[in-house]
Image (cartoon, rainbow over all chains, first blue to last red; front, side):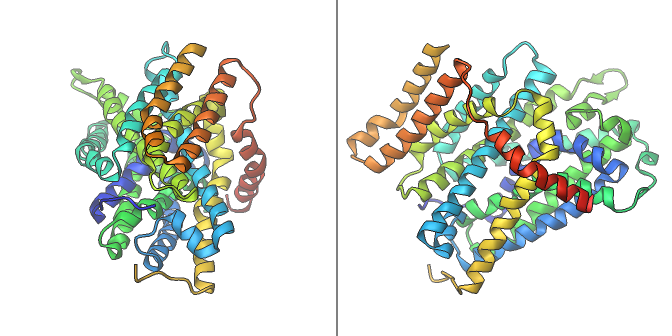
Length: 365
Length: 75
């Protein structure tokens, strides 16, 4: 299944930021600090290196099959039956990922901001916009990011700068107090977010020129690591690692401590507005990728008719998956790392090795 | 609640269904129909509090031990 229109490498990198950062800055730091304590920022470096292997696999796959999506690659590499099965695993995985993201979004709003409103209301309202955006195609989604990106970047930087009076660098010490193992354990938790760079293998097919994909992978990953590191370090320096462990929505709590001269306060509401815009891009992108993948697997000419039913199914699924926010967090800590390692690292590497062994490439297309 | 769910799903079907029917895109219509009816069935089951197999539980049963093993191995 092809889509008309191309995106530039810069836009692909920015989309990659939005595919990971919105939920990562909110949910990841607390879980990360739980495992790695004050060395959480080292865990991010380790996890970024690990995500780099996926990035390399994605890049090599894209060099072998330029202008083919991950789902098409599966079929080209593994043959009709096995290829369709593996592509279907990717589709289901992106679907499940999106359901979790929708749940995280609605649980955050219902827990932290509007406790009287039912979760379902938030997920339905964001999905209506996401369906509308995803039906318009990838170019429209990328143009949305052009508007939201400056807000997001300026705001994360502003939170960090304005919270500086509360920070104490001694919270980051001692470095490597318990050796390297807690850092690696933290990296495992961070992996389930950072490994989502594999999403670039799907919409990377629409990046023009294809050889610039490496550049967007590198800038994408480095940007993600930078902003995630900023939020994690900021949170540890403000609260101290024992306190961060007990937080649920780290970046939001970080915005809450900002107070300049008793009048510049309560900026978390602004954070909320911008964060909702960011998570909207994430949900839209995942929905688009799921619909595109399902259309490829079933051999359709169009992905558009699938967007709305898939969105509806996603809402139901996000409600059925977990009972409350604690279950979501427990899952992120105890289940997701193994699952995401399997489909985000294992499957792409398998595809690459099989393609290399069977000598498959499609460079003339 | 039930009426709202059915109305919402009818709206989703109306969004693309008639166009596909006129263009005789049976394959698209079939795949869309499967996803659509799956969504409707799950929504109704959720509204009536019927027991539905939970993918998160299945994932937890399979990959929970994997994560545990990995955590014990390196972390």
